[in-house]
Length: 265
Image (cartoon, rainbow, N blue to C red; front, top):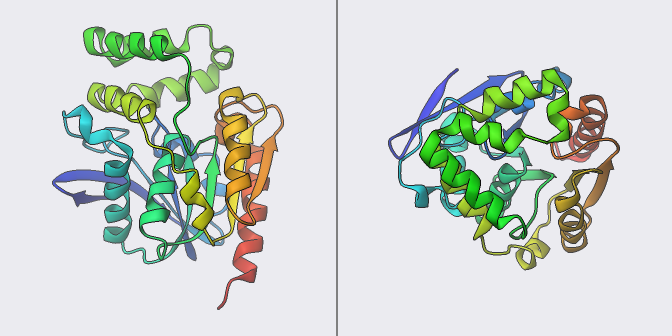
């Protein structure tokens, strides 16, 4: 994969297709592979750039867990996007990547022509704090693979061998520092809900119908963002791009095609 250097960190990305650029930001413990089933549905008419966030996938990340605060991650993502040569884009963010995307558009509105937020929130998701702390302690003491084994135990998605394999492959590429720092960053984040009312670009909010922690936050974002659309993907959990790719791709493609057709030449 190609790479750019941001503040001394090598940031890897994938860049395929031609046309107006779409930038994809994956979620916590994810990678560019989150979009492996999404990009093929779009690359015949769009340029698709997916980025490994710091400490994830093949990108470098610092050992300071405080670095992974969402505004810092957004600053790295923005610089990487500009270093790749992108002046305007459609921005797609999943989960933590959606939280980072909100910071990007609020800080750099001129960059984003349309925003797609997938299974994410504008404020901290409360609950399960003790479980999250146990996972952080496990990662620090026993390593990232032990954290994955604990995290995936009992998760109904783990019953699908192909999904479990892809989930594990991405998860274990996350550095321990990014794992701990990202967890703390999401747990302690400041709400952006009020600021979302300032958005003026076409915005699509997507959530899996079985992703209970993110359903109400998705509705709250849709209520704040003027003119935004909310689509609930039937049968999907937290990762509709991988769990129900046909429905997710149809939703995303339909929105982007409509936005692009209406955009000035």
